[in-house]
Image (cartoon, rainbow, N blue to C red; front, side, top):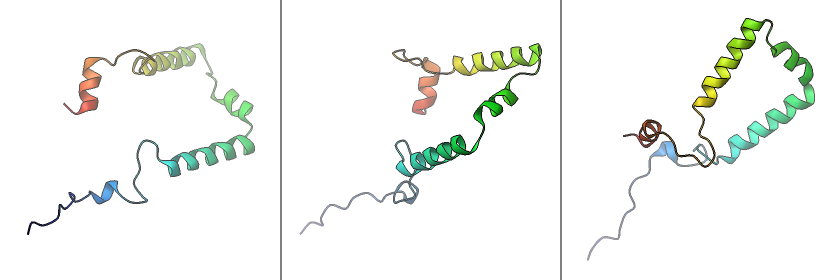
Length: 91
């Protein structure tokens, strides 16, 4: 008599309540709670003023950094560049 089909063993790192990933509800909840706490207990306007550039050179540096970061962002409705797509797919 043949043995019943056995499912493949699961990787313990990707199973159970500690499994994290896209759509992780526990991480989402923690993020929302911490953000809400920050907004309730912090003078956000003051923090924003303190983070503002202190000189024209610093403002230019921040603008260049933002431009660089945005250049890596995927635009809605646009396909990812082939290199980034290959890296994402692990090829």
